[in-house]
Length: 445
Image (cartoon, rainbow, N blue to C red; front, side, top):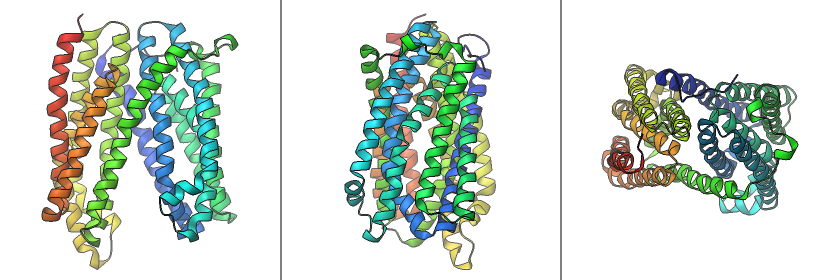
């Protein structure tokens, strides 16, 4: 697929064409994660399922660092592409890839050496320490492949191609599931094999991305003399990447603190909350994908000096977010009880279903707030105002944690939905006034 210049043509069509592959990719990833857990749990045993779950916090930190750097690099590459500065686009790509090779190799080495202390900090039970350590160390070996895929995907997305990374993600995920079924389900290999198949799938996605770029995307094809690190670009990439990684880290930390409050409310509330958060993940994913489309659109057009078109991209994106909210609101209201029934089925689970329905009834309407917060965050990322996105996310997450602690003990799971609405509302009250101040003082056409 050739590069897509978002600096010209129909704005809404650009956003939809960019967002749809991301939506499909993220939904596919959520489905794959569920399938991977099912295979491990059913064919290896509950110990394997527990081990992968306990390794997840460390793996999430690794992915946050990698995705943060790659997202920061993606914004810069989109700017250079929009400005027609192909030489800088290639230098940024080479800098990101070469630094990533060093960074991911260092992370892999540290992870292999310090896996046991890390897991001890997480209070992993001694009887599960050996298999969890083995699993985590192999996952760390795959860090360079994970980095390369994310960096190359960011490069492709920066020139408007969100479909190709999706295809490679699907191929690698299907490969992973197939290998798991064959080697774990049929041949009876254990958790080490589960980790190896994950690394193999990551390597395949990275190799496919490299081959595709060198065969189909001359714009991103690096010659030998172009493989070097630009120190100035590296500093800017790390500055962007660190802020993005910190922003992304706010959400899992906030969820961990909220879970601590939920864990004091009894088994029914814990079970219901764990079920509805899965629904939340599927509800938020398209909103986030539209946001990423806004980011690339804004970055390209600001790079080209088309500030008015960049601003119009935000408002078109918010219309798409609103249209999606109407659909997800109706779907959740119609299906909230059957959906909860997928998680609990016996007669004793009636209370859990009722709690989940109560939460989802409120959240169906509240999903409008994150639709808007994701949209405005997408604009600020594309504009390079990453500190604003970090501050907005910190405000929203902090208020959710505080009000969950205050309201949940009194109102139960309904209080958690109210806490979410409060966090999103205050975030909007901070970011939208800042948006109007920013365009009045920083951008002119």
